[in-house]
Image 1 (cartoon, one colour):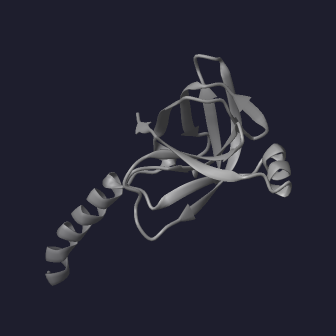
Image 2 (image 1 turned 45 degrees about the horizontal axis):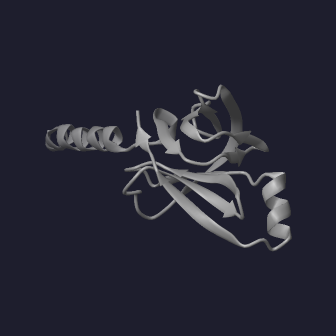
Length: 141
């Protein structure tokens, strides 16, 4: 009987925690990207960018610009950080005039989704091209 008294509150806490946690596997991330960028060796034009999981565990991401009718699939690796992200963002590596989508973070989730480095980005990095990070705010739909 003692265990039964605690079971309902514990179950409610667990369920509320699961419902509050966001992940890319259950979300669609939308961002207005003001520059063209590369992901999986393909160029995506500037405009509204949509990122969503193409499988159950977000190891394959569908990235598209519906207005430009461009889309691709890209592999990602999920990494867990100590704290949940306080906002949804797309993170790009920037070399000169070229941008490469490198990571997606979803508000409320400890997981980040890193994309594999493309050949073009690897070549620029090998040439010691100056690099910076560009972070764009996104929303969840």
